[in-house]
Length: 166
Image 1 (cartoon, rainbow, N blue to C red):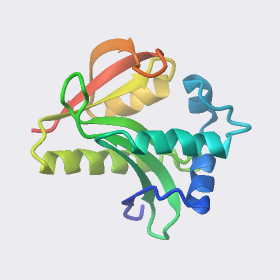
Image 2: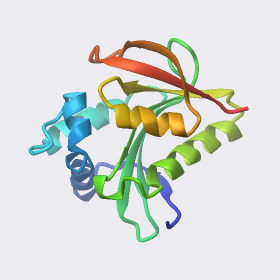
Image 3: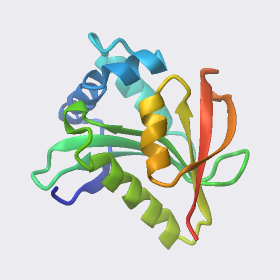
């Protein structure tokens, strides 16, 4: 697999179209999250949601690109969670055609290394309870369950995972 790079989402028409394609290529996630219908992912809503995310203090919305500069994933990162002070991965979405090819694993590793390099002690994320494949992915990478609670924005049941970085 080619090396990946991360860059901030600039909200160009091409990038927005690619992000809509990322969501549409993940119908199971779309249905589980309940935010978008995979058959009709509205570009204006996706853009508005991601602009809101990017405009939140301490949040970044990043695109993952492969060696040919194709957009293969989307990451939303939070530098410090308001409750626990840890950095969080708010979303890691890989194009559905690239599942089980190491893209998600590589992106997770890049994020872990970034926060490890910053001297952070741990990293957290929440997985929707109704996405067992996502939970299996993260636990296979060494993440461990520390809590179960509803997400802050939409009240969906989640499993909170933590990975020590030291």
